[in-house]
Image 1 (spheres, one colour):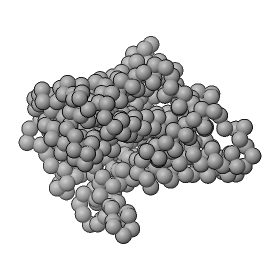
Image 2 (tube, rainbow, N blue to C red):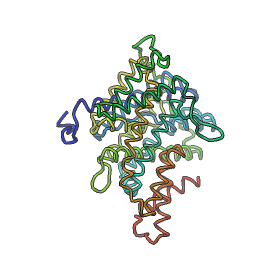
Image 3 (spheres, rainbow, N blue to C red):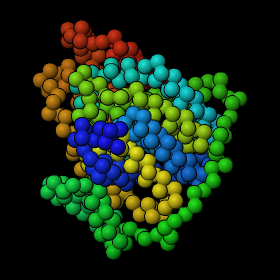
Image 4 (cartoon, rainbow, N blue to C red):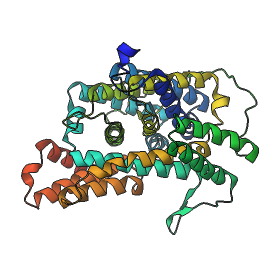
Length: 428
């Protein structure tokens, strides 16, 4: 493992990588419950989707760890699964087979785009300060996700967001977890995020928030009802073009944003500000999406919760391999992993949010052609509830400000092309 993953070179060790991988899994294990729930609204068997979710996560994350040698985990993405179920199937009236076909086509197109370095060129075209801003925006976004899932922050018709009832035991447990994890982090305890979640889980049992499972081991449900279920007669329809474009856009820039943001936090950018092994990482994402469609789940993407593993010191592919192994165990120990609720993971996600905003010190706030695009990137991720929309606002504002401030020479051709693609997204 030392020779293969170069642990010493990356200032890490087996224990640190394994703890990081388990931490990543714990913060994203909710997808094993949420994804089947969402896709069942599209008429899919929830048991089959559970198995497909775990298997696609294992395959994609293993490729990320062994081939790309990066500490990022993959699974069917949130937002993408909602678009699959609620827009394509329920709103547009197509079958889940139609939606799976769109996901398969998306994966195949991504493989081609990655093969010809198109996605890599897109990553390289993002200005350096916006790359740093992406890390900060993801930090705020992931903290919001954690607080919202735990009920600490709730949606409100008048104010958009509001504080939940802190007298509620679930919310109280989340706040207790944040305090405990914060103390562990402040005392520089190794594996603070992981230990914080374990302690929070134990405290939640007598509080009645965490329910102990009736059983521990279960047999994975069959995927026969979702495996290779494709529908080809509508692939040349206008609706398929719209669905495919939307999936491509959402997945591409969510994945790129996550890779850039988390890699920035982990100091995994080279001297030119490029993510190491980015092409291999994008291949892992593309293959994961293709395999996921065949198994019977929505688009697989790189999870922003990978930041929690990086915050625990994960620096190599061994972190991803450890996460993949946890997904494998989850196939057979699903009832046990069900105790990992949002109230437990909120503490880790909030602290990761803090760790992710560190690059703000490196952004030039005196050059407003750099500062304003960076600021828009940061705030639009949590406000628009989308990593990709944050990148859109950042890049477009960067081009406009440079163009009309006499700094047009600082805009690369690929950045201009990227901005035009973003405008196309708004026009369609």
